Length: 437
Image 1: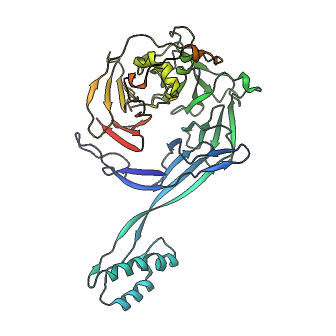
Image 2: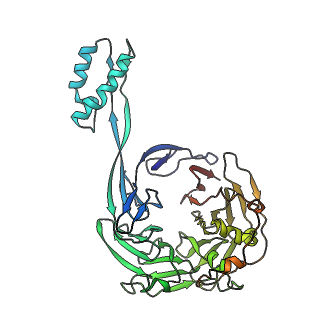
């Protein structure tokens, strides 16, 4: 189910009209079922109805356009407001005469068929008439939302992990574990495959794609991250199949022995382009990193998120917490970054302030801001190698779960920063929280 909210202080131009100290208030707009569960009979796999990614498209008129994706299918939704008048002002005492005149008068309803006039709203009027002996019903104008969609399917054999709109306003990309496709918004039955990492023998697979995103204003450039901790920059003008990378961003300063866990925590779970198109923010399990695309050898800033959990990596592997994928986001001026953590903690950092610990907010109805303390050891990085099955048995930690200092069941995985205002939306479980600075 997809729910939409709208800021009540937004003007027709789409901008916030707020006094300096007033926080924006969001109101419920509409909801609809975006995807439904399916079953792939060829692979005997159930495709859940859950939504993996949502991206807003360029607004060309008063309608809203957004892309949604589950594991296999992408849909483009057009949502349009439509004002509907339900009931005219009338006197209920003259029941028979009023009812006949109401059904005969089409002006009390706009945007609906003639059958829906009678079957849909005469019953509602009758129910109100039965409960009231003498009153006047005024004109009631409701805002309804009509929806239309396009479906882009049958292009991914693996779970979709990324969708990104291009700056040209005509195309978008979709990425799964091994492939990245480019679609035209007007063509739903055909796409172009630009990156294919699937080897001839799946036993030779060494890395998978974890995230992909178009450059914010160069329509020919895109970046994608991998499970080896690399970020690859691609120029689609160089070749039709983007097998060769323009640049590879990797942390050359990372040291430490190659271990079973260091290979897992090297995987980048999320990546975001900054609005200037030069910087990229990435998140792996242990750290949040800011990259300058002109510096390929190391990030310009590294913020430690889960360094205190490093001694507990065997326990985190046992309960699969080490595979949790946390999002990251930037504000509009690219000076602040945010990501999530366990115990519903929201971590916010400011670049250039000298404070590498940032601040921590516990996401709840009444949040208390508190500083964080992190150890100073450097996180280990390495490339992905074949996992040894016997390693975990040798390094297994028998510590109980209550020795881990955070609540692993309460985790802040998804969040987004408003592009022009200091407003962060965070999701924890089935709840949505918004914070405004």
